[in-house]
Length: 167
Image (cartoon, rainbow, N blue to C red):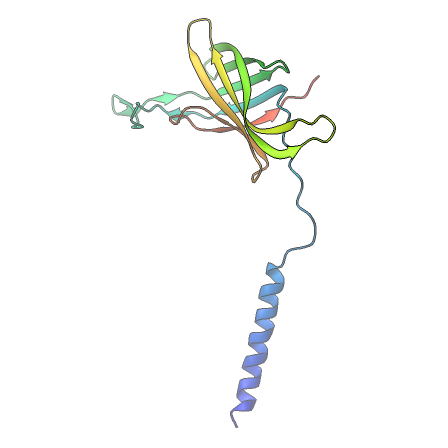
């Protein structure tokens, strides 16, 4: 006598399970391939405004307000010879110019069959300004998020870079 009541519940459970798993299935379409850049060329990104921090990582307060570092637009120009120029345009109108060198620091296992060159997943950018200011940035290809990220010090936010197209 219990079987007529169990059958509708079993059918409902089976139908619900089918739709649940059918909605979670993935298609057979391959994910878009992310090309590791050869790095040479111009890259632009905007570092957002952020709270200034001391060497211990604590936010610096002035008259009860967190001291803010204004947002900046960065343009990296990487030469095939390893030369590097950086123009940092701060939102208040100031512009800082740096010169330096870039070197690959992390390589993939993929070697181009034609050129026999490995693709660098990350590069180190060592820069100096004429006023003696020194900066170091890591530009890294994030193969999971399919983007290029710029890392400065631990006290400043990382930000995304995009290639500038030649005009």
